[in-house]
Length: 220
Image (cartoon, rainbow, N blue to C red):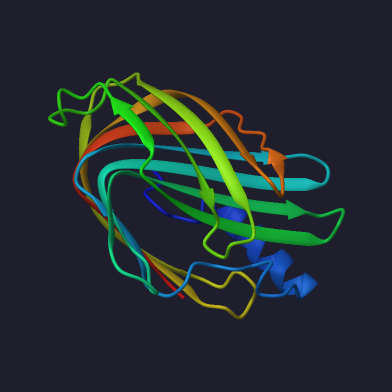
């Protein structure tokens, strides 16, 4: 399962992104990553959906995370605690135009509701929507997400760490700690940005969960 803020959706996606950035020699604004030590943590209900789309020119990955009782700790300002926080990550590779972008959004104070017995169980359903500006200020996103659990809950406790080089030289490290009960989910997702328009989110893999501790730290 992909966790909160995890920017590598698949091994293929990671390799394609790194290779294209390196070969094209694109600027850091096109292969930009979050500032050092950007952190989001939560201990409430949440959900995640991720999707990969490709055609003759494009390779697009989209991941949306929503978490209740969450705290965002950016590298350049004070902590921001919210009843719910959303994280949207978009990779957009256009082989025909020789362009590649990575966009990262942290959205405070979502419209969020979950059928979770007041936070004491894995949500049977979850609805979230929000909008906000990318961390580098270059794009604006709006999204809506509906999740419905379709499996029995299982408990997971994991610690993962990975280091990637998105443009061949820039080093990004992602550390994640997950301690939660989770279920697979059906999903309905709509996402649009000013730069890319409505994104093709198809066959999304989705989960709902109840977290005792879910933390991700992205360091550049």
